[in-house]
Length: 291
Ligand code: PMP
Image (tube, rainbow, N blue to C red; front, side, top):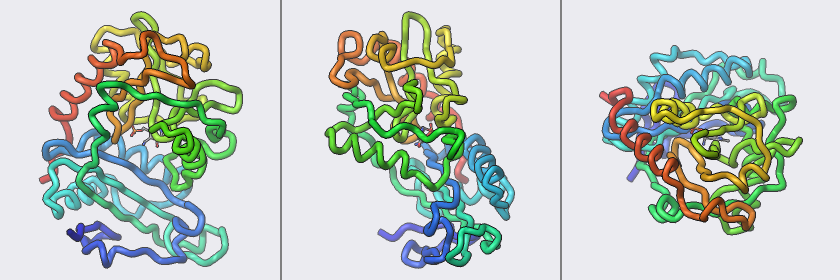
């Protein structure tokens, strides 16, 4: 079935939703994007996703020609046009059409598109049994070169790491900073549990400020856990009491083995399970109504 796509202010059938080969998003990965979820007729944490998108665009000096409110409406309208109450939404803003040179001044109008599709859930087995992960040899981009705080269209750093996980036959991989601190996964943030503390790599290390990461930190505090943003190494991860990854698509997934080492007893931990449940409850309880 053909999806209706929002493209530069209009909803068009997917066959007509095309961008130019001169779009700098295509030529250079010059742009920003978001992955967003709708649950039960409401878009979860929409304003936060839109804020992150506009912040990235601001740094890249891409002037998004519509307001944040109009962008929120574009997301909701795209879900409504496809009769979706539960969806995975991809929102993309590129530098727009230019010529073959790098010069962003040649691109006068950003390209904006929104795709809303039914969500392909991760297999339930991932949540019940937990994931086995590897550490990728590809290091996470340094904030001194391309800051991972921006969800830019240049995802080759993550894709190179993802290829390593595919070669190893595992669904996700851990990325370290150039100094060997644990940063995040290829498309998810990660947390460890030590006693009553929930520990997450700080943003200044160079990782994405995940919306799910922030939500889990709030939920953990409400649950009475001590939440700490702290640098840690693989040794700390291997010897954690629990370990889990977070992301809009993945939600909260337990990790049970890393580089062949079982984490604690090699089973999903109780704090992970509790936070996953709280997260699911929240996704169904709040959000921006689609209509
Ligand atoms: N890190 C990276 C590199 C990501 O691409 C993502 C999003 N898929 C995340 C973390 C998780 O962010 P969020 O919770 O906002 O989806």
